[in-house]
Amino acid sequence: MTIGVKIHRVILAATIGALSIPLLWGQKGSSAPAWKNDANVYAELTKAPKKAVTRRNPLAEDPDAVAAGANLFDQHCAECHGEMAEGGRKGPSLRADPVQQATPGTLFWILTNGVVRRGMPVWSKLPEPQRWQLVSYLKSLHSAEKPQP
Amino acid sequence: MRPGCNYERDFLRMLKRKRRSSSCWLAMACSLILALVAGSGSVAKAQESPYIVTYDHYLEEPGSLEVEYFSTFGTQREGNDFHAFWSEFEYGASAWWTTEIYFDGQTTFNDSTIFTGFRLENRFRLLQREHWINPVLYIEYEQTSGADKILKEVEGHDGESDYAVPNAIARREHDHELEWKLLLSKTFNGWNVAENTIATKNLTGGNPWEFGYAIGASRPLGLKASAHRCNLCRENFIAGIEMYGGLGDRYSFGLHDTSHYVAPVVAWNLPSDWTLRLSPGFGLNDDSHRFLLRWGVSREFSGFGEMVARLFRSREP
Image: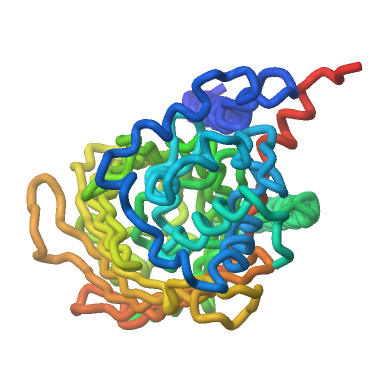
């Protein structure tokens, strides 16, 4: 076997190995949602800076904000947090008290910064108005059923 | 040995290679179709940037697989125009790590169609939260032939004349490259601005480090989402511009003998989970191709990692 062939085989093996690691990364464990046993799952809400906490939702009076937010939730959030925001395999319930009692500014801050360490990506790629629409929708969950998009 | 025998042997080798490359393409096409069919039932999230060369700081969502196909048509002075194409499989390993594999190929008109290599790419988010500027570290290993023409990045003294070599000769060169990029990006008032600094080392031969850059700016046409799903809503379109080029190498850093391009870009994020991208690019100096037309189509499959993990998980009673 020539050195060239050996190098190719090593590279091929390394490639297959490198591809399989990320696939299994973070996917191990039991089928029960990890957040259910995690007492600190909502702790990130308390880390929002004061300036962010006091921000007001500029779309709070927009009659379309909740429906638009519901659409955005379906597209971007339901996969992890569940169709009805009741919590999924990866993301915690957004109907829980800590979320519903958080200020709109806090929710906006979480959406913008994500919780990268716990697997929630940053959502600053959504323009600000869309993040506020999502906040409007999340706040509407407190008292209402999910509106039909 | 008769000279004719050499010719015959070379011809047979060429035929074998052609068969091999066509079987590679068949395998690639099958895997693409399988991936599309397997994931067609899942919910996807389409909010993709319009850039084709520049990277912003947003990574793939954890557990999601994005399957992409891109195409570049390039004009070539003193040679044949070409159509280069590549498939990307991009996977979000975590919220701070995205990994990707590419398969490249090209057709040079009046010449041949060949498979030109593969790339393994990893992007790591360096900071946990959003900051004034957001850095991402990009590391890529490339195993390509000298006939690779996808122009995914321009670096060193890359120029149009490098692409005029016939495929049969160019493909004899085998490159093992390690590419590092520092991706800096910021989004404010709907605008995304991104800058990529590129450093590449060809591991074969004694080639020096080569450098390059890519910068881009883009913005959705509408910032608020509509209350109803629609295909042609303004927020589904993102338009922008990107510019990229080489910066020489370790021994001759600078703009001398380098090529540069400017390219408007537009992306259409369809609610049906598909993203289409289009980008006409224009060479800015005599070392650049005069015109590059790029387009791409992609689809994101959520829950791909979960699906794979389920295959390895024991069933609970």
